[in-house]
Image 1 (cartoon, rainbow, N blue to C red):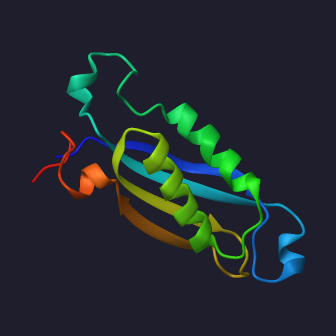
Image 2 (cartoon, helix red, strand yellow):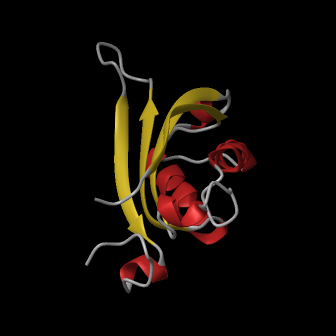
Length: 129
């Protein structure tokens, strides 16, 4: 079984929506991440170096969400995935974005799963082949 670091329902503020008037005001969304680290937990020896610092990931996700307006939550999910895979020791990443826009629903959302170049080539010690 792969080791996984989770951030569940991180609240972010971002300008998002297809109509310009929807993007005019910041909206609260939730982002959840499931990250398979490049090193398994046993290899960390109780040290954060080489692991996934979930606090730093959360700060970067919030920062990235606030950087610019977007029309689609799909675009936000792709941007988050690209950033996490580029900046953190993660092989496999699942990103969920929840948006609270439709009446009579809890939320609308998207889910994507992406792999780092090491994860795709099975170069990560945490990836089971």
